[in-house]
Amino acid sequence: MAGVTTRSIARSLLPASKYVRTKGFARQHWTVRKKPVLTVGRTTFLVSLPALTYLGNEAYKRVQSSTVVYALDKAQEDLEQADYLYSCGETEKLYQLLVQYKNSDDAEFLWRLARASRDMALLPHISVPEKKRLTYEAFEYAKWALERNEACFAAHKWYAVCLSDVGEYEGVKVKIGNSYIIKEHLERAIELNPKDATSIHILGYWCYAFAELAWYQRKVAAMIFASPPTATYEEALEFFLKAEEVDPNFYSKNLLMLGKTYMMLKDQDKAVLWLSKARDYHAHTAEDKEVHKEALDLLKKLHA
Image (cartoon, rainbow, N blue to C red; front, top):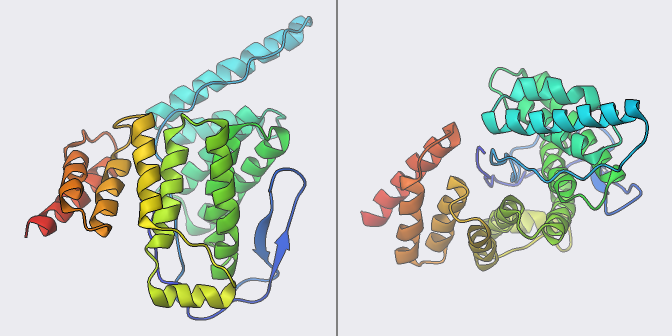
């Protein structure tokens, strides 16, 4: 995960937007009527996710037809293969495997396809137009997954993440409007699966991003919405600690964010403790290496 960052809110307001609500659980989102004007900056969060495997597929019902049984067995094998490819970081192979299920009625395929499309968009060799296409494609798959099974925690999680991604192309007003829905779906994902550390972690990021907004950014946000989203570092800390409690040492970025949050709360001893853990985390991915470097730099500042 490239990390969740908070950038300055645009100084200029966007054209009028339209609030769209689809059937089912809170699958509403903000969208612009026309292409938004160029903005100076924007609030950005939920930029990427941890490379973790999500198992726990739904059991298939017993059927009598041997043809259908074979189809179900093949589908189950492909789900298992998809999880294996994801754990190995084989993004392109995973996408090619799952895209054949793009018209499936099974949410388990669709949320995985949303995740794979999003991961494809993040590959360094992907062109800017293709990145945008894949980002919107990922959101559509996540939306379809929810339509087919609103009790699927992973569908809620990836809907939240993909909704945040498309907001990057639709401007500040849309982005802030969507932030309420993003939080709602993350909370629902946690309600459905309280043991999913990544959903808890991402919600912590949501809180951290809004807690980090400067006063002038809050003022601009208040010009767009009467009651813009708010959060505190204490709330962010609660989620980061909960994620660690659910799955200790599961993700280097969670260790880093614990250290950064304690820094914002002026608790240097605990900041050093968690930043040291992030620094010493065994690096498996490029992101882990980035976490190591950032933790090292922050520790140097604290000891300066």
